[in-house]
Length: 303
Image 1 (cartoon, rainbow, N blue to C red):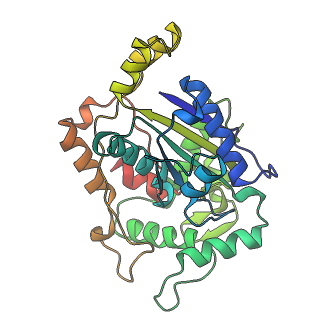
Image 2: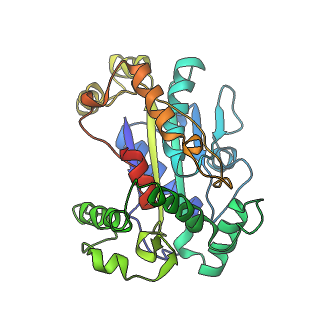
């Protein structure tokens, strides 16, 4: 029923916690509810300011804890974290009696010195396989998968590069995007090489920012409207708010195994589960948001 975000920025100088709290404040205002109305919070931890039990930390800092009948959960599934958080909020409402749950995420990796960012990122994803922990670990891990895809005839180097071109063309239409000018194929292919199938302009972009979602039970919203706790305008918005129909989850390895094959990919399983649970197919979907941290992720998601 509400969303809030900070403007993505380079070297904002703000902490991840500040960005998370700012986005949550905006989401609550957008939803027309107050902080004390929450009875659950889900947080995605940050790399720039790691905390033990991020959700508990945020809830304690905001004086939501201690209190009876409040649930805080920290979830870490990498780039899938916000979606995992949304699905967990849905479960908390359906199965744990929650009325109003906030999903909060944010990071300030752009404000980290490059060397420190790489050190933390590398340490978090280093492979136990000999010779596979060369920095930068994450881009080179995705690059290994891209090489495998190219060798198996699934995609060409130019097609991988075109993902960044396409995404830059999409980005320039968004008022908050950091990308203001579309990339060309030559620019992507001639950028600094990170790996055999990956250039600098194909790597996930570092930025500072925060975003939050407010998820509510239909019974809670109905009660607010009946008791006059929501304005007429807010009540109308509640009636058209999106509903979580279904979700699917699956997990793959943290880093590519020595032998890459189709068994390591989890996207297909998650998508199939989501569609099956909702009794829908791809033909029923009007909009797809596909994860594009590296071109190979976008290609696999499309497939």
